[in-house]
Amino acid sequence: MNLLNLFIEIHLKLKQYRVQFIFFFLFWFSGFLFFVITEPNETFGNLLLFSITVRSPADAGDYANFYALVLPILLEVIVFGFIMGELLQKYNPIVTSRILARHRYFHTVIIGYHHLSKRIIEYCVENEEPFCLIEDSEELVEDLINAGHPIVVGDATETSNLTAANIKSAKEVFINVGDVRVAIICTAKIRKINPECPIYVRAFDDHVREYLMQSPLNAFSFSTSNWAMDRIRKWTQDKTGNAIVIGRDSLTHRIAYYLSLEPGRQVYLFDDEHDGIEFVVNEQLHMINEFACFLSDLRAHVNLDEVSQVFICWKHESEFDESIYLTSKFHLRYPEIEVYVRIFDEELRDLVENYSAKTFSSSMNAFKMLQKEVKRDSAITPTESK
Image 1 (cartoon, rainbow, N blue to C red):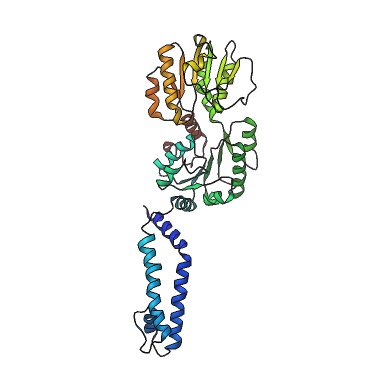
Image 2 (cartoon, one colour; image 1 turned 60 degrees about the vertical axis):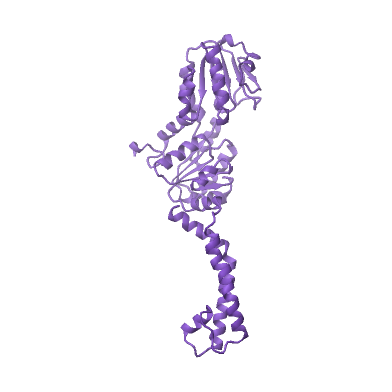
């Protein structure tokens, strides 16, 4: 534990015991005044020794004897109890992380903990760049809190949480949340608190990005799915045959819609959470509201002999088992079908490619693209560019 953490934890405990220490001080001070009044001929040193019960007046009365009995008890219970008991206990890590965030200056603030945020934080840690994170789900950031990183657990739209992250002294802010309302509110509040710092906001819709980039917000807005489409367009160029797209998010929908615009291709979008997408659905795009993790789930709706490409775009780490299983089955039963699998852990790339599938990471691609857009003094600017 570094010195700052130790100072913060002691500060928190002292704050917790404030009432007890105030009572102890007032009791001691009352005793000191009593001896000043009743022993006017004694020196200041003797009066101080009387007040801490090291000595007793020669003609000590009932109050002096009572004071000499009670003060050591209070000293043991409050002072020594605090030192020997409380300081040896583990402090509330959430409160400590919040205090750590408040002590950050000229730092990077990340709002929302998702795959892109994870890559930003990893880069900051690796390069020893100061940062703090605001995330309302304690469960998502539990490991970061336990590691001693500055985390504010709470709603980023609340001014108190922005203040706790010391937004006023931030050098840049990355907003990576899926909720457009939260992104807009955060941007507006941050801009009022800090008119100068660059704000980078992830947003899907074109009109939202345009609004965020206008004055007075003056944010840089980007779409990770839009960036990811550059590589996917190369994979689908001049391709024929039907396609299957499996997933739930904006990138999944963007892929399905883009493929459906290609002449002569039927696209089957398997999304078990949504009954529509952000784009105008055409006759070549077919929505199936089912969770498809077996070939039999797909065969119920699609003739796999007519399919040339499959995009598996699940983004939850817990669903990678389904992704690799489905990929292996395509490799075994339909080796002629091109399979593309979205991954977020680079260590899994070789495992997927063992089944002749191609991999893509929207967060890694977005991180690299974002590095090209940030200011020169940004925490994520490549070190060779600084």
